[in-house]
Length: 264
Image 1 (cartoon, helix red, strand yellow):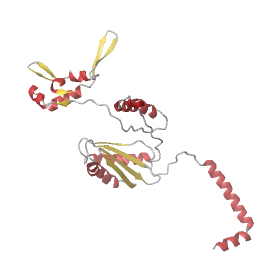
Image 2 (tube, rainbow, N blue to C red; image 1 turned 90 degrees about the vertical axis):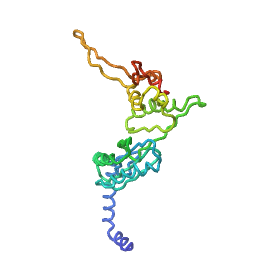
Image 3 (cartoon, one colour; image 1 turned 45 degrees about the vertical axis):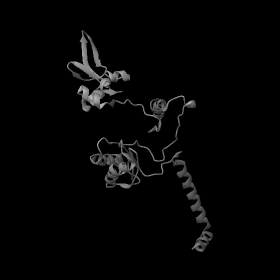
């Protein structure tokens, strides 16, 4: 076969040279119009599903959260492959579609299937689709540390959440920034069963009071002549003492506060 090709090329030199020149010109034209990307997307359209299931071990997350979502996504139209990863309290499912599928149509299909899958998940589970980004889109890992350990881990995490992350998201082209590690700031109300029984307070009453201790509401408008002022009821807790002083219920006309029945 190769000998025939060589013989044909030798006998028809002019034809081979013309074909090579045409191919060279066509190649230059294609290269000049070819888009240039530093990080080209070499993967099929992918939709990421992030599901939080607090309190579940990796085995429980796999069986109770990841498996129902995978089962539902496998039956979606245009899906080529479904992959997943399960850890303590977190499930990640990647749904890959066929080449040429519009990413927004793929997200619509996944969203419809995800609504059906949510009815099978444990109570308190929250699920959401990740932003439109490529699996090749991880740019860098940034580490924050304190000098000589003078700053507490919870303060470092707060700095990453409310300062560094917000500034990185403001950069054009950045779709997501995920903080990992450190300590997450939270307020805890630790109940005391003996005090609850002593003051006649139920756990539901205490829970509702703690929720209401961090809520602002609107009070309408106050009209004075040609002026109109907005009335606001400021109820957000600014300190631990604000939570402690929150009234849970009244007993014989005397208010019972959260600080009397629990430790904040």
